[in-house]
Image (cartoon, rainbow, N blue to C red; front, side, top):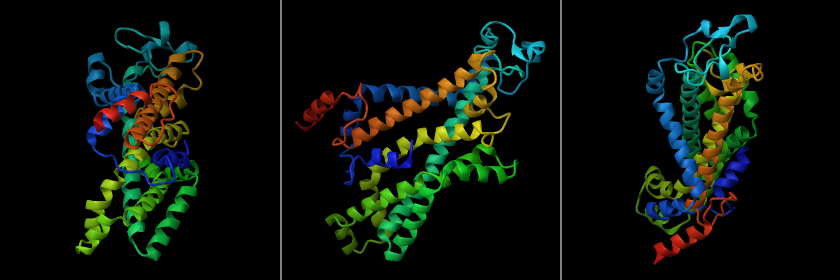
Length: 337
């Protein structure tokens, strides 16, 4: 998903996206969207699995790094012994080819890495985008010009090429998940957000209540914190919800290319890299991380679309099913009465 598409989904139209009218109307509109609720439940379950990874693996009695050479057939190149990739009471999803490491343990710990890197990168993108966008919108002409040109440069930079170069030259002693999160957060995403926040800020600062705050002697920082940030909440929250699945895909792609998270730390993209030669002998080794990635990205994308629609009632959902537009309109009429 390109940054331009993310921005268009976040904003919905060329006109500024209004802030949500309150928490209750937002939750009321969100509850009418069945697809978004299902997606939220899936995301909550994935986060719970990632947080409870040590407990789940302890319950299974395995860990993600221990080798089990007795569970693979060395005469056949390391194919797991037994049916369905070595599934048993001790190994719920089987074991890895060649190494015999427990696949369930690596899958749930991989959720920790993939979700953690994506969320950390999103936080970096939000901090840079919001701060620089407000600085450009409230600053003088030269500040606005410099910040806008820098944002344009980062928007036009090829993410994968720059990330590959940066990750290749950094020493291996640096914690790899932290490095991937920083590279993804600093290189991509924030430029489009900064331009969007700048445009919203230029519109909001012309409103009467902002002018009144300025005439009252408030400083720029206080105006930005008390008057502008509430008006920027809707587009920023929407954009961040759409950034998370993109960052998960980028982390998986970097790990798949061999420059992301390094072994023995498990990652879904790294598991796909090692599994691409085992899809016939041990298909579950490829299908399980691929399915986890697909479900996670799909759920986060659907949830982001639901959040966007709930925050901006004028914007029609891009989903074909489960959007509940009639129920949403009925809920809005009920709330108004």
